[in-house]
Image (cartoon, rainbow, N blue to C red; front, side, top):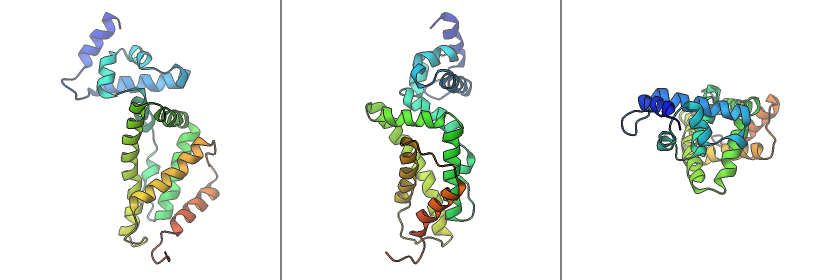
Length: 204
């Protein structure tokens, strides 16, 4: 890293481990631009540091590796519709599926997430980053089913975490097998069948 870059990084750097918003934004924008221009093959912490005019120690202080950084790049443009409250569990699941598949299909996000999953199979740091990210998303997706319990749509004794896992399992399987679904009719059927077995009063 040249002296100019180090000087800019020093001016941006926050005290201690707290992130400086200007530096964080510059790093995320650099990472996103590199992904758009050269894809996964050309993505590296070194390339991001150079483009963002930031020191590698700063990046590694906030992100333990490129997988963690890519997950933040992936998440920053995730559509709000993924976690919207439509008033029903089936509607929420449909909105979730529609938002995720549109995000994966219309941007480079699907490619990024496939890479993250692949990296997690061979690298412990990547696996840890994916596990942490997945745990957070599990809580958010679980809220869909928690709202259903609160509205009286779903049985009170269902495991909302397991429901979130079922939802994640479906979309991950579709992503990894190149079957991103965009047909609203098909997505409504998936949502209907996924929720029907959870409805209050359904025999076990």
